[in-house]
Length: 432
Image 1 (tube, one colour):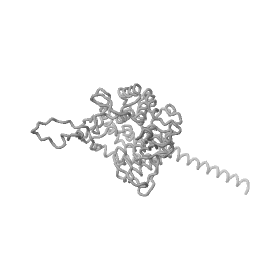
Image 2 (image 1 turned 180 degrees about the horizontal axis):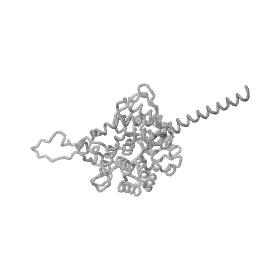
Image 3 (image 1 turned 90 degrees about the horizontal axis):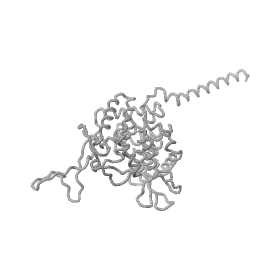
Image 4 (image 1 turned 30 degrees about the horizontal axis):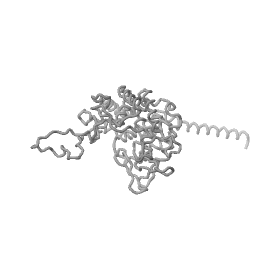
């Protein structure tokens, strides 16, 4: 072959190589960003991870979770992905394997998916998004399920239960965060599918469901009166409870609603309506607490739900965080939580909005992780620092522990500890 032909072939090869590289760069770097919708700012997401994560906490959590909680899930004889079970409890004998709780909660997987965007793993996030949709959506027309549950025998396949719009909205929130971080037509398409399914429900104001509002007020009856059945409890029975049709305010992710309006303008008035409804839900109480739910069609708030008398800490933190993410910072509530963490070094599981007293029991690591996220979203570094300090009390720092690197709760006995997916996914997200 002559030198002239060799030069021509070399030039052709170089041109083809440059063209191939150009196509790859366009497909994987430029194309995902071209025509990308600009989503609202997400307060707290811009804080450098190094401020709260010294580059070993997040990897430590992931290692502990993957080792003790992650399992392959089979549905209809097909492995649909790897998901985190609810909890793992250590053995009371050192060196022996502990036991897993086989239930799988959608909320844990969604928190993990959101954390993947903070960790910057695009391929891992896309794989997670597809696997979650495949596992938790019963059929194309249903909302996502709240849990996956297996049969009583080892090896039984998992089945989804508890379909609800709030799970699909939470999944959509994760997709929106992924789109904000990575862009791309794939994620945009997934978001549009969820938007199409959710929008009619919100437009028609059909988000309400039956919920337990609280204990029923007991009326006095004269001895000759015959009270309606269920009004007077039998000796030893719990007092009857009220039921109502309403929407839990903690289920309303305001940032997700505003972000969806960038895909479909029909979401804009819906986001504004719910923003106002949540912001005005503060109770007339000596404590800066929010109502738990809003009653369907009555524009009235339900102070507490679940049959008890107290506002739950987790619910209060979620509502305040959703508001802070759209620019409505409740300084009174933040000051209240900050004072509790600074003075008591812990939070109760709830407060009675009437008496102002704390409910028995103490919060779990997930609550402190959410407090840290609230501090970041509201720009209150003192709250974030205080929450992180208390959160670290539950860090498994012993290298001999089989849950080393994770966040733990007390186990069923004084010699065991639980690695709970809820705690570790919320903490992972908060640190990043």
